[in-house]
Image (cartoon, rainbow, N blue to C red; front, top):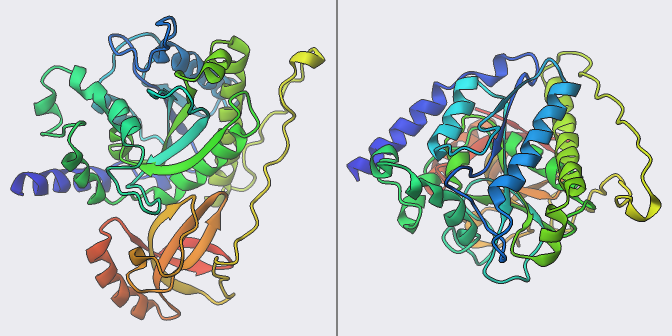
Length: 385
């Protein structure tokens, strides 16, 4: 127990003393992380001809180059730009040392079953899917992405006993408050929307999962799985240079949208304009699916309609799935539900009185250490102390 407490205190100290993102006048630094590399091939195709490390490196390099070209004022830091092995902890450390405003980790998925396909977007947190717990939901993916730790020298010392194969190791992640959840959710929603309709057709949605590299980054962070190397249709697309270029372009579009909103939220005036995309003649039979603006799903009837007056409460988690009001995870409170893209943010202990909401928060924090207080106004939330 003393060892566990020591880890938690160390992690809290690292977040509290991380570079202050709010001090920047704009989104000035982004870190692009190409998963795996070197002796860590990542997922491998059934015929052993295609490695995840090569696919994601190509996409990450394309994304990095496009941001550099179209946003010269943005510093782009890559955890790797060649086929080299980078320790998992070092990937997060690179981002933290750079004082980045955003961290994007690029991966390709795999499964023993060849049927699963599609892309997915992940942010830090335990799974909040109904009838699934932290150790059941996406744990095969989580273990695989975290297992690179086992390839490192002296990993037991470097990771203070964290074992990617042991479910108990993930308990620590539940105790770590993610101070950047709100912005991570926002960017994840934009990524999911922009990947929709692209070369990797199926959208597997957004989920919260305990990926180590997201846990240790002190900034808004997402991990993107761009299709399944184990699925023949996805693999066929990923092997095409054109497809990888399209995926990089769609990730760039999500970045551009997020940067514009990020800059505007800091009251810096007019956000940096995104250059008009270059149009190229493409043969009709090879043209990419038309890009249409993603439609916001209609708010389900179960979503609480927030009154115009300001309310205060505690946000406990967010998920892409609607939950019934009587779900036991709401601890007997009737939740206020705020929709953000394809995600639903669940807020309990809600009151028009900030003092009463703070008193409610004390009890809620005992059950949800990673929760945080928000004010609710006009259907949106703002962090509140």
